Image 1 (cartoon, rainbow, N blue to C red):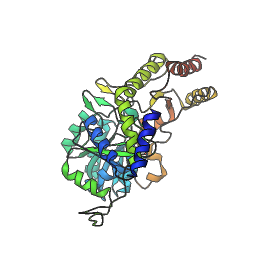
Image 2 (tube, rainbow, N blue to C red):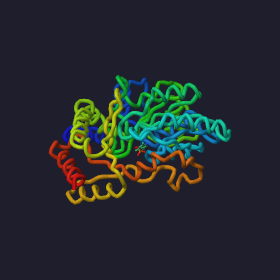
Image 3 (tube, rainbow, N blue to C red):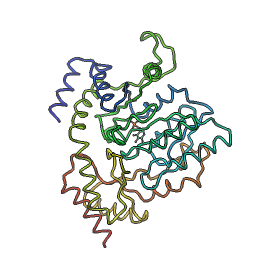
Image 4 (cartoon, rainbow, N blue to C red):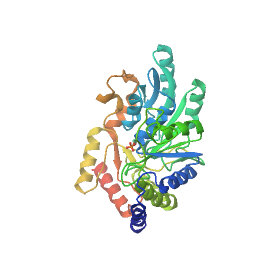
Length: 364
Ligand SMILES: *Cc1c(COP(=O)(O)O)cnc(C)c1O
């Protein structure tokens, strides 16, 4: 893509439209069309995208937002940042997404205790697989809650014919370089169908702008996507749609074919489609994980642990009380999961090499 991307960057430099250039609007239209929402609003990163959504709903003090315990810190951070209370919920041991039964128990518990008002279910599409939105939607309707889909890792995924980043009342994504659709720096986007919230979010992301640039009606943020990033993303979105998403699924399948009899491989639910932000295997123990990780490292194969610490153990969230006895799956996963290299440009031979290295260790 180098030539195409270089040309696109040069265009921006030539036009000197670094902030809010036409490429930003063009990209927003392309993204909304791909995802299948009426509106897309770009912003500076995936964390701001979540924050802006919660701001549009006026979520704050005394409000409870239900967040999975096994995710990147930002999913809960944004809730605390807005002054609301994150209620951490355990995850499903197969999909690693929010456990819907435990979600309902947590909502009932908050209602029973009466300290906070349940307002939002913040569901995460972890590692590229959408959360179980059919069941989450039913619970949201039953308890009159809003759904915020954190699709930072989910862009490109789907359930049936419906694409990820369209399941929430508001959905968000991130263009951090390591996400399924990555920019050459930070970036994020918000997807929705509600015009009133669009109006608010557009103002919030621009210092609470009113009728013009120097009329400010809210306290907001400075959160825009740079034109250069939008230009790069236009090229990358096209490749993502035409080829990358398909290829990354081939790679995941190849990994699974090699590894499924040897370790616990990722499970994509029937009717669900993953964009494979990560390919994560589950080992028997922390000790076994360390051995495999070091074998792979010796052969120059990088791996990562997402996430070594569940959110309820993060110091930054220690001011909240967590229902620790009900967060056991998440704690267990943090000791046993291992993410293998995955991206659309891996060769079959490279995937086979990773697979064989793991196989040798498991059979040793
Ligand atoms: C990366 C990520 C974010 C934050 O996105 P940034 O663009 O890095 O701010 C939020 N939630 C999840 C689940 C993520 O993986």
